[in-house]
Each structure stands twice: as structure tokens, then as C-alpha cells.
Amino acid sequence: MGRTGAILVVADDLIWASRLEGLVRDAGGRAIVVHSLRALDGILMSGFGLPAGAVVDMAARDGAALPALQRLADAGVPAVAVGQHDDREGRAAARAAGAAVVYAYGALAGSGARGFESWLRQVGGAGAVDAVDAAGQPAEGVPDEVATPTASQPASPRSSAAGVVVPGIPSERYASRLAAARSALEESGASALLVGVGADLRWLTGYEAMNLERLTMLVLPRDGEPALIAPRLEAPRASLAPAVAAGIVRIVTWQETEDAVALIPGLVGPLAPRMASGAGRSGGARRGTERMAEGVGDESAAGGGRLLVSDRLWATFVLRLQAVFAGSPFGLASEVLRPLRMAKDADEIALLRLAAHAADRVVLALAAGRLVGRTESDVAREIRDRLIDEGHEDAGFAIVGSGPNSASPHHEAAERVIRPGEPIVLDLGGAYRGYGSDTTRTLWVTGSEGEGPDAEFLRLYDVLQRAHVAATRAVAPGVPAERIDAVGRAVIAEAGFGPAFTHRIGHGIGLEEHEDPYLVGGNAEPLRQGYAFSIEPGIYLEGRYGARIEDIVVCGADGADTLNETPRDLLVVRGT
Image (tube, rainbow, N blue to C red; front, side, top):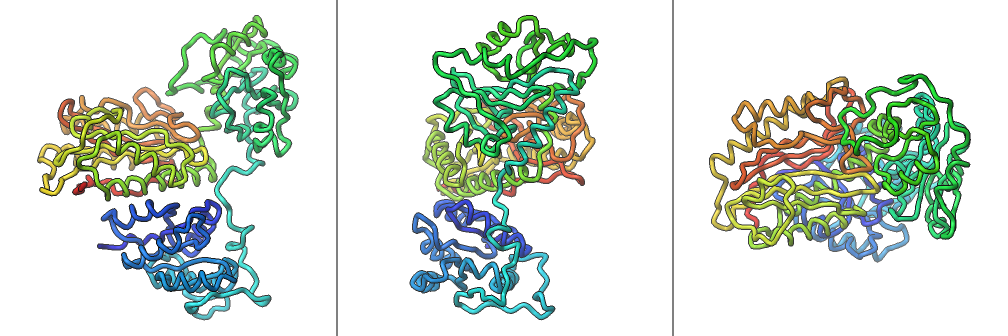
């Protein structure tokens, strides 16, 4: 079996996983993080190439470090272990389990970092690393012993605890987001943003509120400080929201016997004067979106105390707001928030990448395991379990469409038993630290008798793969969103499968699984750098079989940055 060139990081602690991943990246390597033995087994048994090496965190809470080292040694994958400097028994056990080198955590902030880079080069997992140390001398390896820093060996900023950035959204980012939203609000001529529970609230404040009949709402007026209205019983949770904890947003609580909506006029303040029709509007802000029903208040009036409410705010709250603000026109918050949320910043892209890689490992593990004889619903349960094992807080969906069910794009996993000689469409994803994963791969299970795909399916898949490649290559700043759909669709249509491609080619992704931009005919909005979206052409022959390939892609300065890394070829597996 060949080598992928990647370095596995085996750690169940998210902070140490991120730090070790950062060390690999700093040394010019490409890291793949796994959080459990089951995920490690999926990588080692996937059949798609072994990693060049591995880094194992000895402080794993579930005691998985030594078994992980043993599995790696059995597979012939060189590994280093990282542990406490005073744990002599642990060091000895790690070496006995197969670790080539054992480092102390502190050593990786000093001279051990050079040895670590040297080890990466030796196993073929380092890329852009110069083979010299800071003094211009050839870098030396570290013997099979724990290296410890000394006073004459200062810590490297890139490797220190303070210097390794744990992926996340810093609290100051919420201040800049609120400022950008207020600026866009002023440009629109509206008086206030009224943001209920959902992705908009989380993007602006970091607060993942419970979706209850009790009102939780961020009030962002044109003038005055932003305030978060929350039920008194939710105040402890709301106070932990990054924007609240940092003092950027204040909390206004209400008791069970109070009318929460009645608090809002006082927080909004004086309404903006009515402007001439059409003035101050950010035209075209809703092109290509999946809109809520038209008719929320008077959309035709501009300014005049206009209030912008969350697109998915409950109707019961909208009607009560309209009663309190009688005569004021209402619009949708997406008018100002949509353009801001579509362009992802570097931290958001890093989280999307981590989410994509976690989903990739689930796909590889499924492809390496038993599928024949199991029900679709059983495989779907395994997908959800593995997503959680891989660090997802929510395993949102697991489409398992086998045989003729593979021709149903949104098939709900059922009790159908998977058989040899048929395809399986696996479409899976969820939320990783709030940001979505979503990937689809098509497998063909041969069973023990080797029942491979027929000629028609191979032709279908070849067309699908070419459509996916063409659409991905078309991604660039300034290209209309509909162009990506048109490019992929043309490949499929020219091969005679046009009517069998029954959906748009992609949707945006971020804090929501489906969000703007939508890559669909009729959406001429140009792509911009930082837009994140799926590219997922599919061909479905009803009653027979179907296939789909899906990656999450970010529009970069020079084209597509594809976050998913699993093979896009048809995955032909035994499944037994």
C-alpha cells in the first residue's frame, strides 16, 4: 500500500490536537487529526494509502495512546509520542508500544522542535522545511529519549502554548461584526436589526441560544448600544456568550410574567425618519436566496422607521412586533447580514476545513468496514456515532442510499439491506464548533464474489466526475454563481444525462448547513473571495441507481480551495 504523505495526529483533547496539528503544519507537513481509536482504525484500513507518520498524545483521557501506538507499529507507520517530562513509566511504555521518539511537551517549544522537523523529513511528511537549524548548521535528530528545554534554549513562539492558535472565533471579532452590521444598517436607512435565535445571532454574538417560545433577541439600533434580550432563566447561559462576556453586548432579562416584546421599543430608540422610496437600500441583497414568504410588513417603503427582522424569526414574534411597532414597515435582516456572512474570514475557513477533514475520516472508515448485510439505518447510526467521535457536536444528517435508493438524492436511510453488486451514496455532515461539514461519496460494494459495477454505471460515474472537475475549475472571484451550475450541468447534458441531474449544483455553508450563496441558474451574483459552498453534481436513474460527488469549496484569490480530501474516484470496496 502506498503512502499519502500526511501525518496523523492522534489526540482526544481538542486543544492539544490543534497544537500538535500546528506543529506539523509549521514544519511543512500536512496533518490529519483523529480523536479516537475507531477513527484511527478507519484511516489505517481504508485502502487509500497509509500516512507517512503519526504523532500520538500520551495524555489521552481514554487510555488510547498505547493501543494507538501498537496499531501504528503493526501497520508499519512510524510514530512519535508526546508526553509529560516526568512520566518515565509512560515514556518506557510508549517506546515498548512502538514509538520511535518520545518528546516532552515542553521540548517541542525548544530544541526538540528541530528534531521533530528532522523526523518529519525522514518519514517524508515534511514539505517546505529547510534542512538547517537556526545557526545555519544541519539540523540534528533527537535520540530516543525525552528532550527537555534549558535556559539557553528559548521557546519558539510558534510552538509555545501562547503561540499556537486554537481554531475559534476571537471575542474581538464579534465587535467588528456588530460594527459592520451597524454600518450596513445605516446605509439601508433602517432603524434597527431585531435578530432572533439562529445563525445570525450566533454570528453576531457567539450565542447559541435555545429555540424556545420565550423570546431571545439581539436588538441592534442605528444609535445606542446593542442589547441581548433573554429570559431570566437563560441569563447564566447568555452571559457566557463571547460578545456578552467581553462587554460588547449587554443583557436585558425579563421575568415570566413580563411581556418581552414590550421591552424592544425602548431599546430601539427613536425610529429613523422616512426616506424617499428606494433611497438608502442595498439593492439586490436577496438575489439567489432561499427566501421566506413575501409580505413581511411593507417592503416597498424605504426608511421610515423600517425594522429588519431575522429571516427565520417565528411568526408569533413577528406579529407581536408588528403590533408594538404599528405602522412601521418591516424587512428582512438578510438585507444587511447576508453579504457580511457570505464572505468567510480565515478563522471560519479553518473551522470549515477541520469539519471537512473530520467528515472525510468518517467516509474512509465506512469504506473500509463491513457494509454488505447491514441495513441502511444501521450504517446511518454508525455515521452519526463516528461524526461525534471526530469532534462534531451535532451529527446533522446521514444519507445512506443503496441500490435503487441511490437514485433518491435525499433518501432517508431505511431498513433495506445492502447487497453485493450495487452502489451506495453516502451523504453526511453536521456541525463542528458551529461550522458545517457536508460531503458525498459514492461506493460500489462488490461483496466476496467481486460483483463490480456494470458498464452503464461506470459511464455514468465518468460523466459525473468530469462534471465535478469542470465545475470546480470554474470557481474564481467574479464568476457568476449560476456559471458554476451551468458548467457542470453542460457536461452531464452533453452525455445524455441532463434530465437525471435534478437539483442545483451547490449551496453555501457556514453556521448553517444551507446558506447563501446558492449556485443555481438565475443567480448572477458574482462569487467573491471567502465564499464557501458545496459543489455536488448528481446523476439519478430512477428505479436503477444513482451517484453524487460533493466537496466543500472556498473561493480563493486564484480559484477553488477544496476542503475535502477523500478520493473522488468511484470507491469500489468489498464491504464484507
